[in-house]
Length: 330
Image 1 (spheres, rainbow, N blue to C red):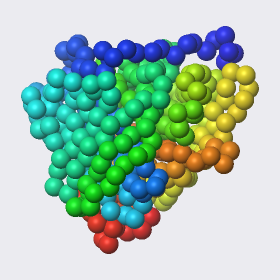
Image 2 (cartoon, rainbow, N blue to C red; image 1 turned 90 degrees about the vertical axis):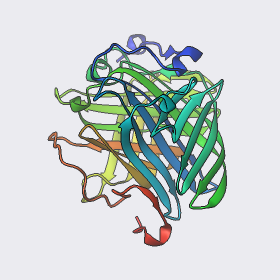
Image 3 (spheres, rainbow, N blue to C red; image 1 turned 45 degrees about the vertical axis):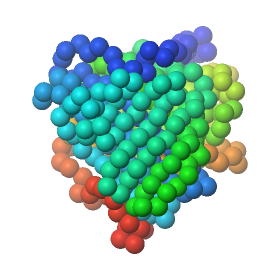
C-alpha cells in the first residue's frame, strides 16, 4: 500500500465519549475500555464495560481486573441485567454501578468491590482517533464499525486487598459502538503501547471466519498520528494454547521506516463473552532501549471452538481477589 492509498485517521469530538443511540437490533453494543500500568508501583490492569441493550432484555458486561507484579490480583468476568445504575449521565457502568468509566473532560475509572477499590483519572496525550480503515472488512463491518482510541497518563489510587497504592502510570483506552457479531472472530492480536506524551503506537491483526486476515496500526509522535502501511505481530504461546509470555510487533510506516517493539507479558487477565475468549497480558514494552507500557491482547481460536477455557497458565479462571501466596508463579 502506498502512502497516497493510506486514508487519514478520523478524529472524534467530546460527544463521542457518551452513550450513542442504538439501532434496536439484538447485536448492537457499546463498550469502553481502559488498560493501564504503573511500572514503579508494580500494578496494572484492564477493564471493559459493555452495554448490550437489546440482548436478553439488556445486559451490562464487565471483564478484566487488576494484576500485580508480586502475584496478587482481582478478576471480574460477569454479565448482569442493565440497570439505571449502569447508565450514569456521563458514561457507562456495570454490575449495578460497581464499575464505572465516565467522562467529564477527562476519563475516570472507578470500581467498588470486596477486596478492590479503584479511582483513576486519565489525561489524554493526543486526540481520539480511529485508525481502522473502512476497507478493513469484518473488523469494521461486523465488530467495530464506530471506534476511537487514545493513550495517556493515569493517576489516582487503587486499594487491593486492603493495601492502598498511589498510581501514576501510562494507559490506553478505547470506545466502540455499533453492531458486534462476536461469532465472526477467529484470532486477533491487539497491542497498544505507550511510552510517554511524545510516543505511543499500536496494532491490531484480525482473522475473521470468512478467512480474511488483515493488520492495521498507528504511531503517534509528538501528537502527530501516522497510520501504518503494514504490521506484523508474533506471539510466544504456552502449551495451554492461550498463555502469551512475550510478543513482537513490527510496524511499517509509509516512508519505509520499521519499528520493532518487544512486548513482555506480565500476569494476564482471561476474558470470556459470547463464546469468545481473549487474554490481556498487562506488562512492559521496549523500543530501541526505551521501556513503556504494553498490553498484549490475543484470542486464539482458529477452528471456532465453543467450549470454556479450563486451563490458563498465565492467569486465572476464577473471579474476585486472589492473594500472591496462593497464585501459581507465571
